[in-house]
Image (cartoon, rainbow, N blue to C red; front, side, top):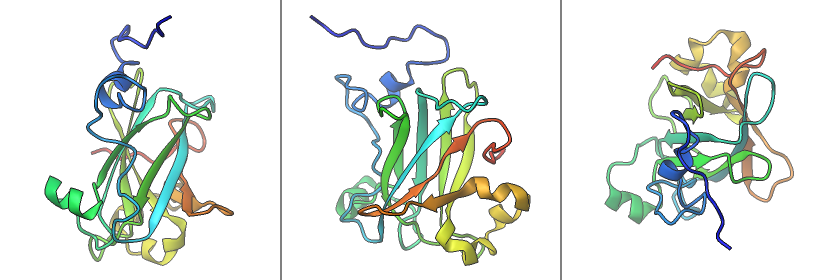
Length: 196
């Protein structure tokens, strides 16, 4: 008996999975990008980032797509496919929330370096999902870089009471260095999104 898979029955999604993350959703197509920003052998501190996307009612979104891009441990962005293959650092990841039983996104990477004097280590994030006509742009900063946060020009532009929505929290009792970063699309804990 064949298993029926999701088809593009709506104008806006849920077919993001088919076109953007086919391998993750077990389609017979190759994904251009995976949930791996950097392999474990890439230079730098290996880390894992996990989180959920929550809607305005506090429910986890099961059909979101997250894209992330970052600098490597030296603060440099990826330049070529050849460099990516040699170094193990890809600099870009794409992951859906629809295949994890807990509706999480989980990304493997390395801790990013500082890209300039007015920048703390960060990862740029794009959120897409069914019904969203425009992407939502945000950033991930890390709680153990609190001193560098004071010099980050983007973080300084965010009202102090809202900055916590951009900070990934270190998860205790994990085998590797792991952070949790949840994205709230609406509500009192709404994540700060940027007009890009």
